[in-house]
Image (spheres, rainbow over the protein chains, first blue to last red):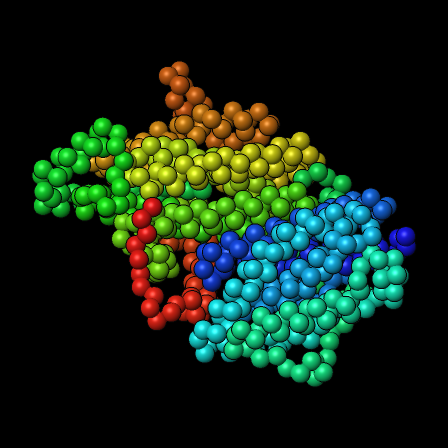
Length: 251
Length: 327
């Protein structure tokens, strides 16, 4: 088994969960209704927990402990897609991002339940169960707000148009892609993207939201290689503010 | 969590003379027998009004209380603390949801209550008008403010209004985990580096006066509450609650080697705690809007409500009608 390709995959997955979990947690106290405050907090807790489990797998492959990995790296050492690091903005953007990202996540972890790397396939079975609630939540809200008032439809459409190029960035190819597929660790980003497009289209067809011709959407890549937007480093600085007071201390 | 505030203002009992004396006597007899009053039961207007005020203010305290700690979720040091704090603050928001529903059973809608919070008509616990400068401030709240809240809530859970008591039973169960989490955080600061110990000592110095205010004005100067005690709306006097808190937590704070910033604090021979009288003028000033964070807290709520308006509108259908929930 190629550890390099596997580690790269695990970092990508873990970093995605950690950063979006962090963003989701920023909704605590600010939701449009209390129930959404609580829902985004639940998803944040799931995602941070998932990232911890994935970093723990990485530790078993010789990487540093999860706290060190999560709280001391710089932006250029993170492999999350840019979509998850973008600021929350208003609820419409957060909801659209949640829908686009978690649809991909649910399909990704479904596929990973068949991974040849047994610890990952086992973990994927657990995460798959949690993600079912995330997509149920996203689909319910997208269907409601995507067909309700003129304002809700206009807002969601605008956010969808802004988020789509970044959403395609989820599927940025790695140079080690072929090894992951050959070794049956993962089905690969292209196969995942195809499933994702079908799923996204199926949900959005039940709303008044419109998808553009995919050929006209230029993906925003870079995140998987550590090239991030200006938003990631400030997020990491905030996340590690207390931890860095004394990284040797126990908190 | 919860910091009272509800019964610190005086009440007018004149309206009681207009109540049906037979129904009033039966109502009081039921409470004296330890029965719970349920939403559809007869109750005097003053009881309804006081309970709405009390439960509503408790609910507001939960959502406003989520702010000073919530701001540390993104900065919590390490996975263990981050995950626990997220869950803890989420609980507080969940308590608000539960309490707004309990208050709605008395006839005031959640929307009206939130409007009254934002326009300043309705109060929330005074302690959340103080800032959390460091991680240790956040730990102080999780441990000791929640501890104070439990003292109040365990007492109120034995009150007379069914839906509120049932909500409090659930809330207390969750709060007891918050207390363990907060205590654990403080133990780590106490047994950590010199910087960590100093962080908590400074937090304790900052938070002790608001913590003493938390239980409300001294019985010597607080509003007349006999009728509220008889109706089991208020379950103990402010000084009794404060004394109970001091009795349970001062030894624990001392045990960790910290200094409480009150040279007069001691337990006297009769088992009562003596302390320097808190500055009640400051308390009044802050509860009436002039504290370090009042404006900021309400502004956050106002912005969240304004930004969420389109979402709430989009949830309505033409047939949506307001229905009072029955807890």
